[in-house]
Amino acid sequence: MSAQQTIHVGGEWLNAASGATREILDPADAKPFAVIAEGSTEDADAAIAAARTAFDEGPWPGTPVAERAALLRRVADLLVRDREEIGLLESRDAGKTLEEGRVDVDCVADAFRYFADLVIGEGAGRVVDAGSDDIHSVVVHEPVGVCTMITPWNYPLLQASWKIAPALAAGNTFVIKPSEVTPLTTVALIELLVEAGLPAGVANIVTGPGHTVGARLSDHPDVDLVSFTGGLVSGTKVAQAAALGVKKVALELGGKNPNVVFADACATDEDFDTAVDQALNAAFIHSGQVCSAGGRLIIEESIRERFVAELARRAQQIKLGRGTEEGVECGPLVSEHQREKTEMYVASALEEGAVLRSGGKRPEPSDVRPAEGYFYEPTVLDQCHREMRVVREEVFGPVLSVETFRTEDEAVALANDTEYGLAGAVWTTDSGRARRMARRMRHGTIWINDFHPYLPQAEWGGFGKSGVGRELGPAGLAEYRESKHIYQNLAPQPVRWFAG
Image 1 (cartoon, rainbow, N blue to C red):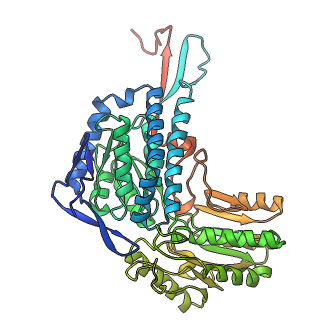
Image 2 (cartoon, rainbow, N blue to C red):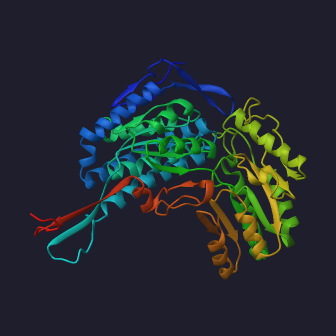
């Protein structure tokens, strides 16, 4: 299997300077299906230098907004053209189902179109009233400069688009480092940017590990902004490295997200079935490898037993297998390391008193589930409490913990009892209660009677240790801009502060 040139610097596709490579494994059978370049700090330095030159001397920052928007729309059209190919690549790379991969491509195309529309619909600047007809004062927005982007392995293509689309719309140049585990669709996206006509040096990619390439993208003196999505520990290191150069930093980190279900949301059989279905979706989509996964079910005590029994019954029926197989509903975990981590959390919960209601083990192999794959059964842990590690720490696996409450105040306290604050949901037919809960829950996104949808127009970010800054929406574009105040005196006069 020959190595793919996956480092793109200054308009050229390259091997790693060291010649190093890495095998990419299909998590469904643990077999390599691609070989990529394994970059290093040398490659990162070259990519940053190319981005710096393209920003300081190239045409992109000064390209008219209409032309930048047109390029973003061309990229969206190319994504639609290649939907099946890229969706399949995302499925094999990350282990998700083929349908999930297709949906991801659709969402990425939507993001590029949204930022194209947003940037072209803006005015020329915000006029500031200086109190005189002789003064023209305006605040305008300019690109930040060279942006470095570090993305996670769970939604590699989607997370890349949330950074690349607004950065390009604002006129920046960038270097992106995808996860070394799932880099292939990000490479494919850079190929589409080149095909769409982006000038050389504007978009650069270095495939390689975080401790070398990611670290260099965070501390290099020629970088103006660092955008990172990933875990809390790595995000803290990125922030510390960037702080030495006083760079702008955007961090989207972890979550431990509550799904709060009141009894009135399950008053009818139809409502009950919907709430259970959504609880399954919240916890087990993409095998729970989602930063916004609803891994904490917080349910009113009066309906706990009925709800959890049905939840566990249906979790046992989820069809596990290779994501490209027909009828499969949930794929493998991304790596053996991630499966072992999930097993550790389940074992810890059981030792601390949790009751296993479903799952909790590796499944038997089948015709759609190779024995070598990193599969783990959807797991429901009942009678959990806030002192358990599985309740407090991000699992990133198909594990749902169940806590109970009796009052609204207790529900709020449980929902907010986390160092994270990314997302959460509340299920109730009482509109007043829904609004109160949404106001009181300290999380960046609150879904009411739903879970997981996001809108390109709405800001995405968190409270607490879930991160700093916002992606998507107007705030997502603002992350990649600097504001400049231009004050023009049309009739200058001497100030006469000094004698002479």
